[in-house]
View 1 (spheres, rainbow, N blue to C red):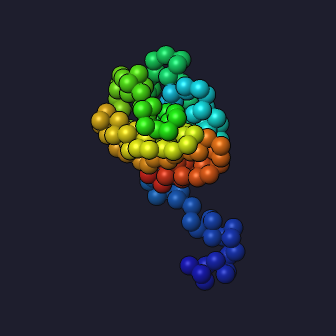
View 2 (cartoon, rainbow, N blue to C red):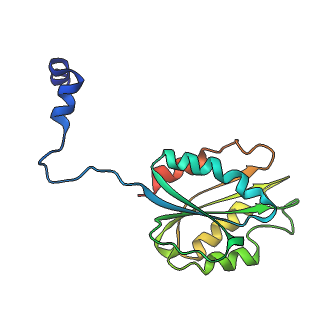
View 3 (cartoon, helix red, strand yellow):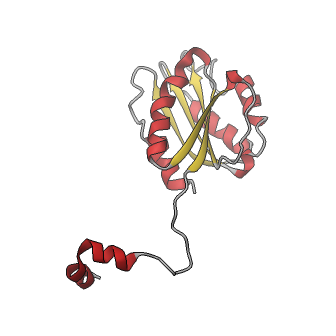
Length: 170
């Protein structure tokens, strides 16, 4: 290979490496992904624009839906990310709320997709990520990853979920 590269340069190498006539298609199509959030107090929607942008840079076609906007259908999405806020000290007000859990459980077809989870917290996360992961597993999804975003520094670890989706979702 190195000899071919030295003799032909990059353009010659690309000509040799093209899969024309080999019987398979290497065309790319974006992977549909749905982000569903419980937007109580607007905390989760502060994370979503950057997460959406990072996912789109990694080859995903992202749709965002807030629980407060009503029912949602999967419509061919191959992955779902759910997010809910962790209010207060994460002792009594831990995500997911009963309303959000019921909402996620009512989405048909979650047992056929992969799911990531996130929370936005003010003071501490408690067991929020583990509880959201439990919801993902309860509906039959394959778990991708989870992350907790500190409310006052949303950039910390912002790459984690997009990177895990890029590696795990196909």
